[in-house]
Length: 153
Image (cartoon, rainbow, N blue to C red; front, top):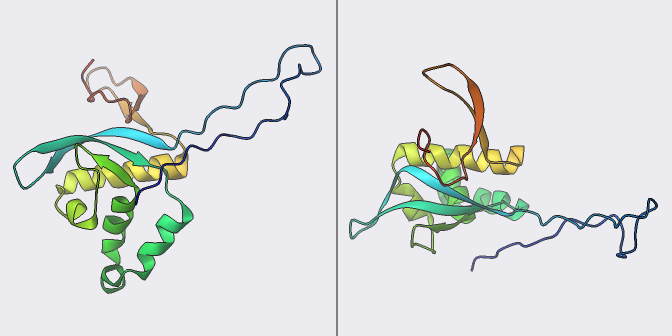
């Protein structure tokens, strides 16, 4: 069963009374726990349907600990990322029950994308990537969760 976290950041005050300066205290911001993405190639299911969009949620400590007890991970430590990624993928196209077998069937470039995406949202706290324009060499940031494809506007 998949859980969706909808935690809210704690407020500095418990009451909606104005702060010392007379202005209302800021509302707490909702913690973003799910991030949409688009795979470079896409997962091809048994019927030949290509699934490119998906949603990854933030990992919990349990998500990182449970795979360490998995026999497949004990036999081959490289399998850790397959089990871990399958635990945090909420949806892949129309597939909502993402399991290690599905992650095993991804193209290598898509698995690499998801590993990097996981690292960005869990370690760095965002889904932005620094890129450089090949034509003008200008550097800028793109949001990998933005839904658009790189190079397209």
